[in-house]
Length: 263
Image 1: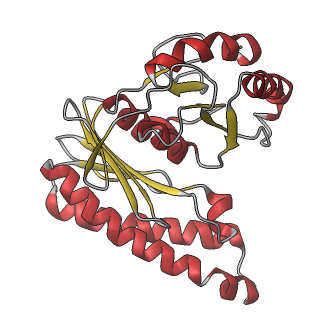
Image 2: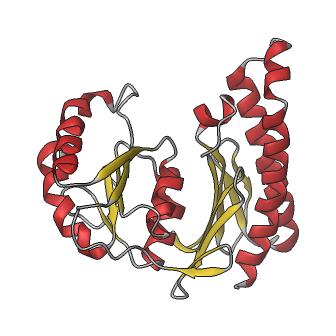
């Protein structure tokens, strides 16, 4: 295990403890009149501070940025990017399935990344050129050759920006089901993509995703042997739409997604 991943994992584990303890108190906080969004922001900030403490102590020369606080430490080396809780709705409803991500970038390119599911304590991580791991075991994406009997992941188009894709998304789901695939709805894009890397899902696609949602899991997925692209086939996620799949399924899914959901 690379030193930076080792330090980041220790930091993320401490933050995961903080998050789960806070989630266990959610019902009490709500009964006391606390706003769920306010609780979420406070817990996120607390978890970010926990990770920052460990990273800043080990790497004072690095820049550290978080989704809520922005840049909290300026440095001359690489940059740590932290997203403490991805899946706000899941967290505030006391559900599992949310995730924490930490990435380390050099010259704007990811060199190390990790993702933790605080509820299950699954730990996904990867370093450039060294493969991807789940709970200390090497992982590779799935090997399905056709859509029959596969399990795919995607989002339900429920936000203001994704609702415009509802009709196209339902057409995709109908076509996938017709070819024998099972599709499960995911409310945390990062964890969904990490599960493709682990072979738990055979493929997944997301709509209107932000850089901080996909940066870490797509790096991990690539190290696990996945392919990813925008729906137009471009090797990036700048459009916000992304398909991630094992190489054998990638070529089957991309044309359908581009036809029904491509802009």
